[in-house]
Amino acid sequence: MSVALGRISAEPLDLDLHLRAVDDARAGAVTTFVGRVRDHDPDAAGAVVALEYTAHPDAERILRELAERAIADTDAVVAVSHRIGRLEVGEAAVVIAVASAHRQAAFEVCREIIEAIKRELPVWKRQVEADGTTAWKGLGG
Image (cartoon, rainbow, N blue to C red; front, side, top):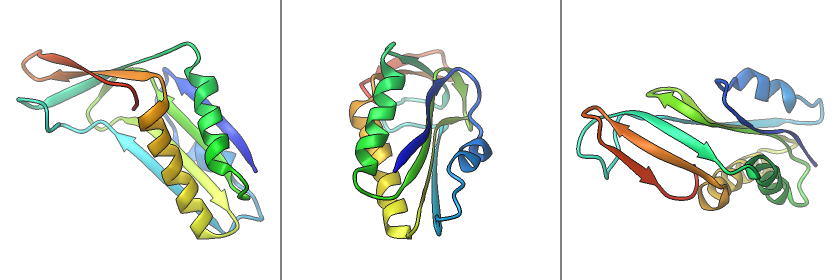
């Protein structure tokens, strides 16, 4: 149906804002996904203390396009945001809310959006470890 919210933000992400954006009396299902910064990574030698996200200038437009493509011919309404800047452990890097008449579409659209973000969104992250070591991670969230 529509992308009610699609943005790249330097400000902390608010799950409630995303839920309000997809609020629709026709929706019997609402799914959410919150991707948070964790304190470890399989490639890290030590503890992860932060991620620093950088986005291409077209990232917000592309994020909306990815959400529109995931919606396809469903009745879903989507709100999705990706954070940029320095995020500490526990902070939300990605928030997705999807509302639809039925749960199957809500789950499928939500999953497709996060997978498309990981594959295609031009956002890069630099992982910061406790000892100061940093490493750039590839394309995606």
